[in-house]
Length: 123
Length: 107
Image 1 (cartoon, rainbow over the protein chains, first blue to last red):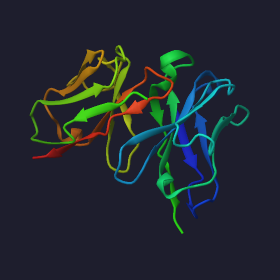
Image 2 (image 1 turned 90 degrees about the vertical axis):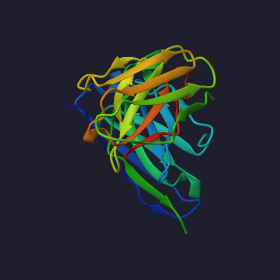
Image 3 (image 1 turned 90 degrees about the horizontal axis):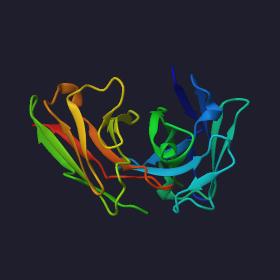
């Protein structure tokens, strides 16, 4: 059974940093691309970042480019999102999501999602 | 980025009703479109991919259609478990985007 368990969300001040983690199990972690998707309170879904199965290729939404860094550790089957220079508009539930495949369009089709971790940016 | 526009934003319906949600893409995405269901406080759940393919375990009352820039999600007979929010998502590009969502409420 595929399981994704996020952690690391917290209340942080503007300009602060945070590292989110997503522990994956139930599938061959290195075989699939992974993404982070966020949802501001009462709002819709926004894709944030993606990483290839090997970890060698990363993608970012323009809204987070230069501030967020996605990475993965195949020894612990964990996905990470390092978030720096936090802004109020980064307040959201952050979900990790497993891609359907390793290549092409399937890397952006999300078939399993974690339960999410809440990041609140406020002074 | 490809913009996705859903309509309506909110839909009031009764159990047993046939419900249709529309999603439009700002440029052609072929059939690379997915539909997700989300209940309050829960993660999204994949319902349909490649515009019309039903994900394993999803009831057959859900169906999808369309290609290019116009897509629809149809629930043939609304059940109590279907009151939720629904999002379309294009996965044609390296920057996937979602529609703003449609909330299906009890009439």
